[in-house]
Amino acid sequence: MVSNPDDVTAIVNTGDDAIMHGLHVSPDLDTIIYTLSGEINPETGWGRHSETWQAMTTLRQLEREPGDLAWFNLGDKDIGTHLYRTARLRQGATLSEVAAEIAKGYGVEITILPMSDNKVATMMKLAAGLAGGASEEISFQEYFVKLRHDVEIASVRFDGAETALAAPGVAEAIAEAEVLVLAPSNPVVSLGPPLAIDGIRSAVVERVANGKPTTAISPLIGGQALKGPADRLLVEMGQEASSAGVARWYEGLIDTLVIDEADAGDKALVEACDIACVVTQTVMDTPEIAGSLAQTILDLANR
Image 1 (cartoon, rainbow, N blue to C red):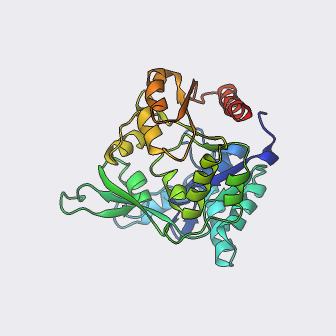
Image 2 (cartoon, rainbow, N blue to C red):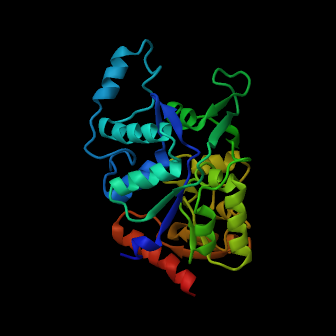
Image 3 (cartoon, helix red, strand yellow):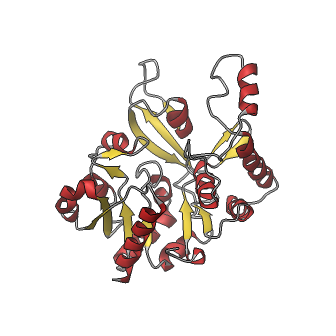
């Protein structure tokens, strides 16, 4: 164990949240909780292991047009989590309260905080309409799941972020953390939503201005994302898919960027952005590599 779980807080993107099959689904919150509890499905990287799909099989049998309703998969065990969240929210609980309850229920010891208790929705504007016509704006889940992120994007916006408040404890956690780490997630659509909330972005900017360690881990290896569209989205948003492109994307928000050994040649380009650069293994194939990466980041803070 690199750090005591009581000392770790995860601030989680909820821009992907959606109502699916009548249930409130929080993909990023659940993926983190399932991963930390050992419940994650190793085959998919989301949902729960040893999953069954009887509910979705029935839905596909009943839907009038193939793919009309069943394009978003929820496993039978996973549905239980969403049933609980949906019921508690309808009872008046906040998303923060429900996230804490679910994390506790799965035995997760670190503090899990959604970025906001307010609704913020990631919206993707297509570079061309689905039929080649006028541009169309779709939800993140339609882009990522239904269209399998295989379309070009003209712009991204975070609906509701302009008025959303950081969830209780989020700004304080950012300000008081020994080190703040921006995980190797998609800079545009995973880190973008929380950083679009003024109370979060300003807290991060203030950290950097005060010289408090603030580190990002690049999600790119050799200019490519291990999975997902992070590389393509950076390019579509006018940035290059490289360690230097990630550094420029986070300019003013971090003091250090950790990049993989495969991208060691980009070190000088990152440092030209006035951002320190650390080269190490970042592909967390094993718990040992993940622990080593975490230790490297903590060592940076201790310096």
